[in-house]
Image (cartoon, rainbow, N blue to C red; front, side, top):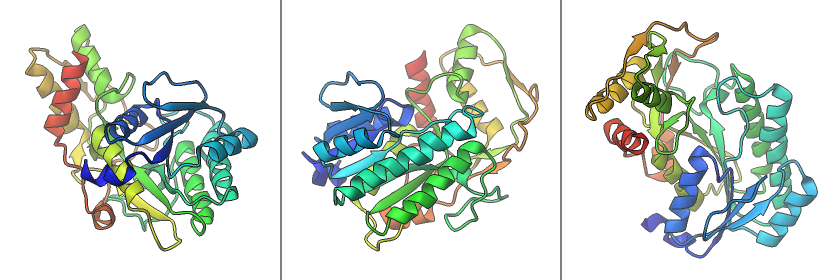
Length: 309
């Protein structure tokens, strides 16, 4: 892709490279000829990359890696507690906030100026009954959201020294998803001939295909902020859909492969503090990156179903 030409043979450090989104980010960078270095707790056996191991909360190890790699860019996707209800607040703050603090301090200490893009979350916002804007108040309804909001505040401190972008991600689906995430769960249940128990599905959501999200990271990296202020961008499709309609779209795609999904809407109650409107205003994303996600829901689901069958 032409926007990545400027990063050919440049060094980019990626954390969370083995995760659902991270794998797509790595693939996109490799295809563009970026010199990719990854940082994870366990070594990655991915041809063509340099894998570094270390714990993000280990100050000395992270400083050593940053000093040796001297990255031109950093994509920070490592996070704990992404799955609903996983992780206790102390653990989430250690991984998501302290880990980021260690990383940013290591970069600032060696006087580098790499463009830095950090995975944030739409769960940082106070719930609203409309699409969320970057200027909306921060009042997370979950421990995960608190840890990501704290990370954003921390990044704001370093943004006077480093060009930092926070991408607040909303609902993501696509190739490589695993159960118990919703889409692979529904596909797997249909394949097993078992019914799918779900809520009434009145919640409004905004689903973005994972390959588009990977593009957002690279595009933000190539167009860093230049005003010594933290830049925050929502990443979503801009297309609100009820959860019921999203699930029905999965079932419709399965039916094209002669597989029937037995959907039991209303079989499960809504979660405590269920967000009934978790959608995003993405006008700032378009203004800053001159880009919006392009994959339609039908195309994305078709690729995903094809992969899992």
